[in-house]
Amino acid sequence: MSIDETTAPRVDDESRKEGRRIVLDRHGPEYRTEFVDWAQRLHAGPRIAWNDTHGGYWFVNGNQELFDVARRSDVLSNDHDIHNRRRGYKGINVPPPPESSGTIGGFLEMDPPRQRYYRNALNPYLSPAAVARWQPVLDEITRAAIDEKIESGRIDFVEDLANIVPAVLTMALLGLPLRDWVVYNEPAHATVYTPQHSPDYPRVMKMAMDMGMSLFGRLQELRATPRPGLIDAIINADLGGEGPEDDMEIVGVVMLLVGGGFDTTTALTAHSLEWLGEHPDQRERLHREWDALRDSATEEFLRFYTPAQGDGRTVSADVEIDGVRFHEGDRLWLSWAMANRDEQVFADPHEIKLDRTGNRHASFGLGIHRCIGSNVARAGFKTMTKAVLDRMPDFVCDPAGTVHYETTQVINGMRHLPATFTPGKRLGPGLEETIDRLQTIVDEQGLAEPITVRKDRARLA
Amino acid sequence: MKVRVDPNICQGHTLCAMTAPNLFVLSDEDGHASAITEDVPAGQEELAREAARSCPEQAIVLSE
Ligand code: SF4
Image (cartoon, rainbow over all chains, first blue to last red; front, side, top):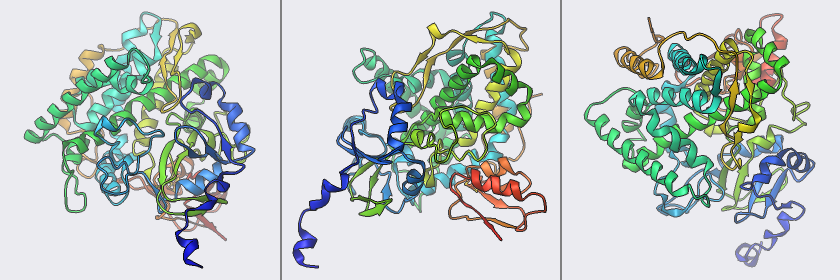
């Protein structure tokens, strides 16, 4: 090899994109409405495309290709290097957020080993066994949220149920006061669905600021008077002999857990209820055969609706995968949503089959960054769905009042899903009273301790 | 038939234990899976195959 060849600028930079170029605005509303067309087109090739929007990035859409690329943490970086200490990588959003934000997306925007230290610290709060301990609490929050509406025969499944249950449970897991859920609720969703050009954007940013301030305050309290929970684990995490650098880092991690804990489960539950309302025969079948179909139906809704549609990465070393020559510094997007609709893996990929088998969807991501809250999401979804099937089995959604997120750029979410149903009887106290009561139980029983400290389920009686 | 979970590949998606609770156990602490016994009990081979098919990370290794 001559010196020239090693030092010359890479002449192949454009040729490697040949035959792979697309122009797909993931942030436009058409991407949501034309998703199936796009998936079919791209799966016919290029299955790893070069998308000439938002600065240009690889768009990994085929299932096998996604599998081959996403698990290569040796050549992919999640790093969001806002202080420019390393290589200036831009994290997991394409395009990256405005520079001013000052926080990163917790350990989802870190690479190992730091990322692994955090996960090791938090896993004992979020493992399947750890989450199972909370089931009585989940049931009770769900019961109370439904009781608020059951006598009226009307509910907005998003606002009155699917927003509330994951939010209250997330507060409990974090070790925050349960009633703080209202501080986080609106901003956690609105920051996702409000685009920067919206007239409402300043108000949403203000709410997000207030939420940040509230959290800073709570951090001080938790330092002074420790309480068990995820935040305690974060504050005291052993990150290879040191702790978190500052409160900004801690806030970033907490906000990752809030963002992950709230909007995704809401999105999954709302979409699934909408579909069940449109398919009353399938709804009856799911209710009737709940024990047999519960798990497969949950995975199928996860696959089909893919709440978190994808994740960005930066290529950290030159590498060839599936015939594509990636260069260090290239940006890429792992489209979990598209890979989940690949007919090479899923028969009739654009249909929902409640009993689908072999459903190895990528909705929680693949590889070392697998959603750490996946067990919480599944438990929340199953609890809410079962309660709706039991208590309002004849619900009819109102398409005129249904509002989907305008775009699916971050989360494939819903803002409203109003429905009517035959009114029923309340089973217990309302939400506020229930939350107060649960707070006492959480505190007295130390429910937010990790599974390593406390193995028993919550006792409500 | 023999079954094992490659611990370097498993990320704790839990689908194996959901599919075949008699064959796989999840760690309490991090949810990562391991096979309960190396030898798949007679009659459970199809379940083992189904679990392997369902694993998003393809971490389940079947042999013979
Ligand atoms: S399904 Fe695969 S990744 Fe998930 S726990 Fe089982 S072996 Fe591990």
